[in-house]
Length: 131
Image 1 (cartoon, rainbow, N blue to C red):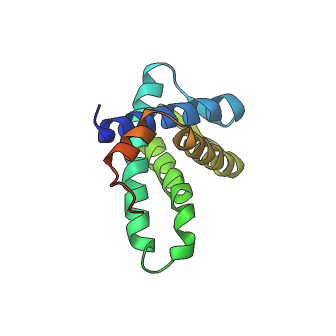
Image 2 (tube, rainbow, N blue to C red):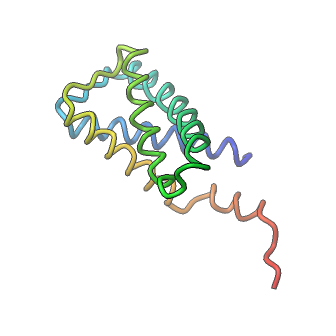
């Protein structure tokens, strides 16, 4: 399977896990199941990837120290746009917005760190080390 496809599937999985956990944990976070959940996951994953790319490009030259936090900002923006575009996701309260953003961002980092086939695909495409 191509590395790009594995990365996209991993992004979808992390979005699904993050949104589902936020729905379970926070009373102000509501997902309509099952079709609303699927729609929200797809939109959130697309917006998250797009916003992450945009934020990294904007901050790369001016704020290198802030680059690790670009995912946090991208997650917030993706949640914001997803709630406005679809009625499948509603978030009530500033505390819920902040905590849901943080939980979804942390879960996406954890999913990316878990070893799996996407790691071997990256290792297989990288040039051999010179020694």
